Length: 311
Image (cartoon, rainbow, N blue to C red; front, side, top):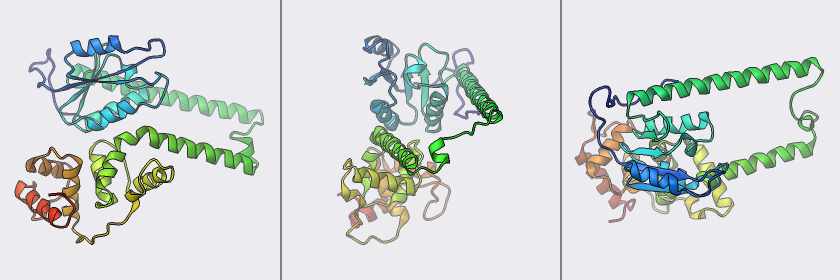
């Protein structure tokens, strides 16, 4: 996998990288139940904000990390002391870093040769990608060899209960899948549910999925709707999120999209909203290549008029 990012120069290659806000992240490890050392190193590295996860180092539930990832904005840098503080496997780590790069966010590990703002750091990331591909290839080859050896001995792959069509085996698999799905929703909810709560039911599922995906997530409309339905059923979300809007709004997709962007990030100026729409690939209503603040203002005024935005 080749990682594409904005062209930067490190100290050895010429120009210094531009100044950027550093956000630190610390997490306890199985053999060290305090983050004091990590916090001190992150402060010394210049992090003006440091967030900490106190869940076990072997736990997949990292709510603080999910919140940090959702709040980072373009031009900022996520900093950790060691790579294992961010990901629990090379594949997981690479996936997280690529998600950040796609949003224009850099990543730096103090004790490892990865800083995506430098050419050396990007080369190290390419090496990490090659290691992940090699590991997957070796694992797949071992699996095929194991299945071939088992078949030669007359053994069949898979769950015997499922293979024999036993109802209790099917029910157990179904329960395990449902539990895994719900656990995943709950562990990641801080990164997406607040946005849904802000925008529903006034805004469409399509617009909300667009906003979340612009923040580096990966939602389809149906998966998002299903996730919210499940959270409501488990009483982790308000049923009002599923309600239809009581007020009829003209079918103006751009008006609702502009309103959704403004609600998702109230700090954005007219030019900032225009820039977000350009990045989403939305074509301006009156043609042209780029959105203008005047067009954004028009749609915001319309959204105010129809009650999509508070005055």
